[in-house]
Image (tube, rainbow, N blue to C red):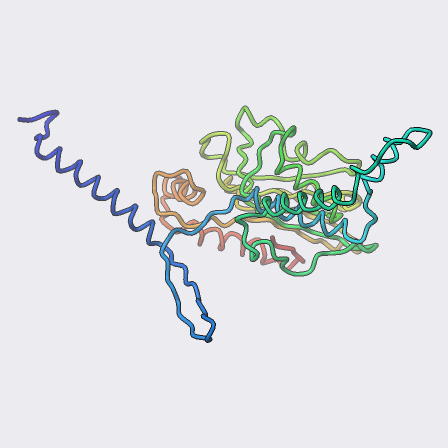
Length: 329
C-alpha cells in the first residue's frame, strides 16, 4: 500500500527514526554539562560528587536589575536614612500629645529592614556572583580636557523611544559617565524598514547636549524590522565642533561592517574613530545571520567564496594604511 508515493512501511520507519533522534537530542542536552561538588566530612576526608545537567541560563534583564539594586545600595551606604516610623509617630500625635504610640516601636523598623533585604535577595536569585563581580576600575568624574569614549555590544536596539528600557539604560550610562563618544556594534536595526521611524540620532536625543550620529547596516537584504549586525557611533557636546561630517561615513560595501567619525584638531591633526562588527561564523546557509547574509552577497554579486570574516579583516586593514591616529572599537 502506498500513500503520496511512499510506502506505509517506509513512512512508519521515518517517523520512528525522527522520534529516536529527538530522544537522543534530549538525552545529549541533559548530559551536556556536569557539576562537581566537593564534600568534606568532620574528619577532613574529601570526596567528589558529579551531577549531570544543563547549564543554567540567566536573562540579561535579570543581571542588569541585580547590578542596579547593588549600585543603589552602595550609593545609599553612609547616607542618613529617613526614619519613617518616627515620621508616622509625629504625624499621628495630636496637639495634646495624648495619642498612644506603643504600636509604633523599633520592631516595625527592624521588620521593614528584613523585608527589604529579602526582596533584594529575591532580585538576584539565580544570578551567580561571578556575573555580578566588578571587572576593572569604575571611571570617576571626567577631568577637564579629557575625551571619554564608551563601547557596548547591546545585541540589538528597538527604535521605539517610549517604554524602551534598554535604550533608557544606554542613555543613562552615557550621562553618568559623561561620554563624548559612544560606540555600538550589533545594533540590529534595519534603517530601511517602514516601522523603524526613529533614526539613531532621534533615539539618543533628550538632553541639552547636541548629538551627531552615523550608523550602518546591511542594505542588500530586507529581512524585517530587525537586521542582524550593524554598527553605530554617537558624538556629544563640545567635541562636535571638531566633527568633520563630509569625511565621516561607513563602509562602501553596504554590509554595515563599520562606521567612522573624523575629527579635525589643531595644526591639521586628524583623528578617526572606527566602530566595526566582524560577524560570527555560522554554517546554516539559509539562515538570516549576518555571516550568511554577507556570504550570499559575495557569492551572488562578486562570485567570491572567501570567508566574510577574512574579507572584513582585509577591508579594515586597508582603512588603517594611511597612518592617521585612530581609535578602533
